[in-house]
Length: 204
Image (cartoon, rainbow, N blue to C red; front, side, top):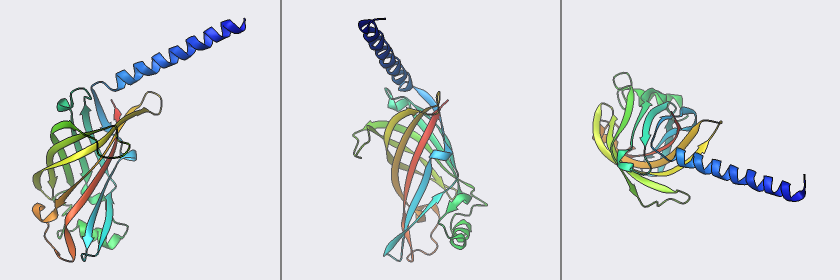
């Protein structure tokens, strides 16, 4: 086989690869249902201590589902469930106190839940984020449900392992714990809680 034939075959193979990739991207960007991957998702928080520093923690058990339509964001939705007992600030004595009736009351209220009620596309404000979406929903903590709004950045997609289409988002919002019936130790422990969620979800 001559050099020109090899060149034509290589060009054809390259074109086929490009077209194949383009087809996958188009398919991946269409409407889809997703399940949150707990191994690659996190829910972290920060709260002020004595008005001079911030203590950080996380919840180790997070799950949920989402429907995402890039072309029609209003048709998108998500639900995130966090196991309250999985709180982790790296100090077991403090974690036990946070699980108690003074704070989370995990025996009575085992789950922290966010359910979206509206989604709309907005201008991305974070570096490296392709798109951003304003998500409004009902946030349930300590048996109290209140509306919250956060901006989710991301929307990038990948395939790993083969056949597993993934999408990722991250966002932040803040609440006052006293609004959710947790008013113990206000002063030494701050009222405002900053919450960050990073989610990677696998297309069903």
